[in-house]
Length: 239
Image (tube, rainbow, N blue to C red; front, side):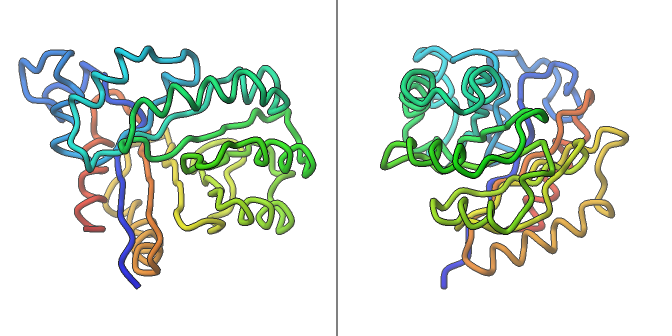
């Protein structure tokens, strides 16, 4: 069994306050992603939750990154929050069609449901059934603990969908493997992560990689870029 691949990064990259801790002095905003991609192998875009990126913007993302780089896109709030997974004929295909502009750099799509969406197995089955084939990898971050049940995990597993664990959020899912990859969001905002606080995740993710599964893991974008440096540390530890 071959070892899995680790795609480690932060939630976003366009932060001028990361100069000089992460970005060198005088780094221009238009070069942030290019420099970021020399240090980390993936980034999670929360921008796509609020607005569909243009084809030109996605082309610039591709041009700024190596082929091995991967983007994780948070699905549009129209899909998850406005229509609560019910609209699969318009907003979902539109979002996925635009996301495919990233080509091989599209790593995963994260569907983050709101806290008021409670467990509904039939809704989940219907939504997953509407994902086109071949579909990009997908993960679900449920924000209501009503979803945390073996029955839901089985539904995700049938479609190779990852259960996202979001440490630091209101109702984080237990770290449970439901796909051939895992998706982790490290969002403890009380203080920056350290080698000590990341050690347990290093060991858990290392075991996942040794088991042949890929890892997508993203640290919260703190103001000064300390978590970006810790993402580099985690990536090195898992390499």
